[in-house]
Length: 472
Ligand code: SF4
Ligand code: SF4
Image 1 (cartoon, rainbow, N blue to C red):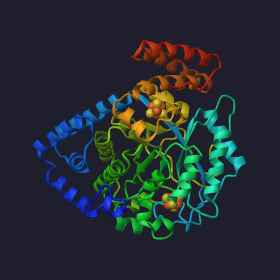
Image 2: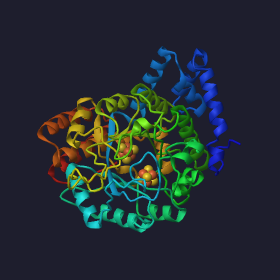
Image 3: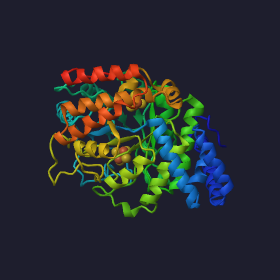
Image 4: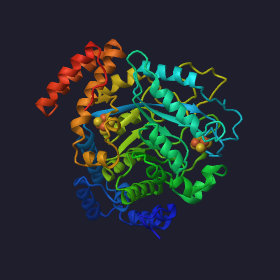
């Protein structure tokens, strides 16, 4: 029985409801009147139900699809302006007891090089990341109670926050580790993490069980209910994601929106972010072995439909995607991207020798952070290293309230300018610096309040003189 308020995975992600939704969407994919009415509803900026959004995703009327793309772009501008938040993944350990068939860290893989960073090695990685200019990390680790227990993760978070190298600082650590207990989520909350991110991989239970044949992750309900436990443990911001390519994309799309509706219904706060990774080649993984791969057009349409369905949820695209693909979806609603990423364990401080592959996937966008920052500015975006919200207590429903009313923009825009200035002064190449300084001058005119603009101008000068970490 479908019940978004239920605490049981199979009731809030109800297979029958998804099947009915997909049948409804298929039956109405050329229903112009219905599609137009859904687009009108989306223009109210209150989001769409999984059923309505699924109709938009299935829509075969080209002119109406173009309207959806235009609306996604407009919503992106209204809610997020032109800032793009930057982050980097940091792989702590690739030891894993699970048998996920799409990930090279699965325990049976004997060719991958297993590594686990010591606290000393983490320091080196963090210094390398700070020297690139990063302020926000997402830590990643396989599931292994012996090698990567929660104590190791907590110690690593403490180490990361403690390092201040030159003007560098990691100000927000998001955590992407396996589903765990309420007790452990409490410990993560106390350690001051930003968002807890856990990808569902697939919402299709039968496929899920086949794709996770062994290990604790095999338990569909325990995995799917993890975000609920995280919120019960005091983590206000959680991130969702599926791995596109495993199951049919329309199934996953309906599933992820039902999950968002569930969090909203049960906790009054939807997901903080949605990630949209596609399956990539890796050590012993061949993406062609999976039947449900999606092309770039479909990927772009999914991004646009997520944007109009959950306008207040950040959308993340990693370096799994190429420069060209990232450029396309930035317009359609993506608000956060990684840059200069290494997906190996220890790859930032020392390049990995060829015979020591420890990477989770092959990166498609291999540019440096400086190149990515430069490129974003050339496209008219403001690369932002802002981490202000959770440090100012703007999390959970407080954050959502500001986001839904678009007031958050009053913080995002000036914070983007000030953190970009820090980046330009401390880390940018001369060319990037010149483009950035001109962009900041131009963007100052777009700060709506005269009072805020005066404060920003004053703080920009102070940053030039050596002060750091201003925020609204
Ligand atoms: S996806 Fe996660 S749990 Fe599965 S094998 Fe890879 S690291 Fe382990
Ligand atoms: S002000 Fe908050 S929402 Fe805006 S960019 Fe900074 S951390 Fe993100």
